Image (tube, rainbow, N blue to C red; front, side, top):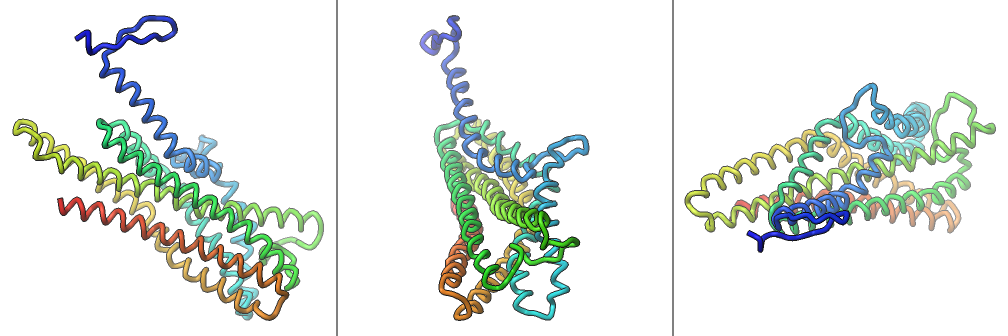
Length: 352
């Protein structure tokens, strides 16, 4: 027994701890580091948008943080552009320009409401994820979850950087359009006040730019939250497959208990995936449909600007189009990749 004990010193006091307890203690520290590695970017971005999953209560101040991005997007972008559609209905060019910008804000607002309304079920999913990290018992399982976490983190960082590059490309392209087409504001829209006088003009421009930042980051942040959840399911399926592969090594006394745990985990993973689908299915359907309209609208605007404006304007428009289309296609590819990876885990598990 003495050979299984370790002697450590904490605060100059001598403490004797079983090596198994020491391993579990150190493993818990590693688990906390891994969880911080997974959650950090998503946590900060969702907090910035005021939609970190939690129970919404009228007496909880964090429940109202969402009002700032929501009202900014609604009052300075989505609302005025939507109202303006009835005014410019006879001009197809203006309608297409309106839709190319307004749909992005609509999707972002929809994503904001989706995550905010589903605060309780999404919070429970994140809690289950933390429990799954606690349930890891072998280095192989830990390595599987860490590898999944690293992929998730890379996707989150890459998507966030990419969407902010889109914003940086959109600003000069839009300013060039304003200069060449005598557009007063960053986004065309109907406002119930005179936007041509100071300080109304400056405040409206600032509001529109902030709304664009909120919309772009919301668009990506919610996508990366879905990535986080789906890849966790993939990791759990991979661990389940590993457990199934070790069935032959179990003795007859324990095999029934082991198989019962495997069946329970399989049902748990199905419930986890079902809750993800129930929370995001309508949002993803609308996003897929809107992407088609957005890409077509952007291509139309660039084609119509060719030959009618300066070379500098065309270069800015084409540069923005290429960056924007690359971002949208990468987001679509991301969902396709998640679906393929999830299907591969399920099919491979069945083959086993």
